[in-house]
Each structure stands twice: as C-alpha cells, then as structure tokens.
Length: 191
Image (cartoon, rainbow, N blue to C red; front, side, top):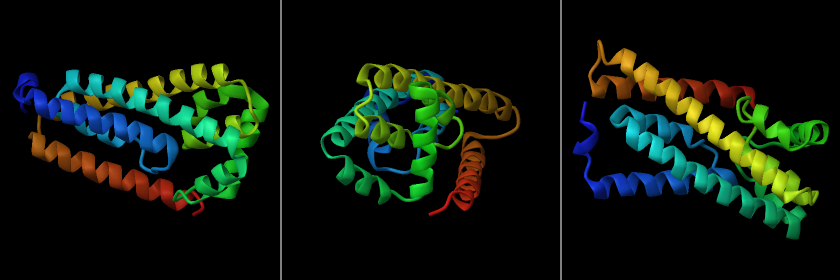
C-alpha cells in the first residue's frame, strides 16, 4: 500500500478536483454516485479520502443548488433534463415528490441511503419553490452523512482486507463489488 505521503501534491489536487466535479455532476445530470470514487480513494489514503469527501460534498451542494434554481426558473425544462438521466423514470420522480410532500426536506436523509437520487430532490424542491434554506441545510447534512458513512465503511473493509490482499487485489474486490451493486440497482430501477 502506498503510504499517505507517497502521492504527489499535484496528484492529490487532481483527485480532489475530480471528487468536486463528480459531486457536482451527480447532483445535476451524472448517474454514478461519488461514493464510487470516494471508496476508491480510501484504498490509497484515508486522509485523502476524507478530503475528497469534503470536495465531493461541496460539489454536490453547489450542483444541487444549481439544479434547485434551474427548476425554480424553468420547472418543465428542468424535469425534461432530469428525465434524460439514465435510470431516472417518471415513477421514481413521483416517488421522491411524494416523499418530499410527506416528510419535507427531511426526506433527503432516508433518500440518500435508499437509492433516491439527490438531483430529484433538488428538482422537486425548486419546481415547487420550497424553502431553499431548508433544502440546502438538509441536503448538505444528507450528502455529508452519506459520503462519510460509505467512506468510513470502506476504510474499515480496506483495513480488514489488508491482512490478506495487496492493494491491487483490493481494487479488484472494490471494482467487482461496485459493478455487482450497480448491476443489482439498475436491474431494480425502471429505465
């Protein structure tokens, strides 16, 4: 395993920029969650992974805010854009809308752990012109909690696997697990 300090500052900076852009992109139109990238980084460096969580979180909050205001100003167009994202269906949008109606911005806390895309919450809150401060506060908390939990879980798994596997082998386990989880998720969500 590379030591925490063997990654060059330039490489660390590049990885943090990617984490920020991934967080922003997934909050708007990208369909693969930042957790994939964050859990890959923790295999190299726990410290860098924690910094990447912050970068992805900041990107997600900025992206979610942009999606919110896009939906405020052009709700129908924003929904059309949302429906072009792979694996976001009208039924999934309606499910998130119902959650938001029933639980308000708190719905983002459970949604982040149940496969409900954050971008749909942003669209719904904006299209209904719901309180931006509540959306921002709960969205920030929900994103931070999700990103941190998955990164910490992966850090524990990596620590355990290091007893038996090399870094390359751990990446093999990581890739296989991510591919399997996405295959299962995508098979369950209507396209």
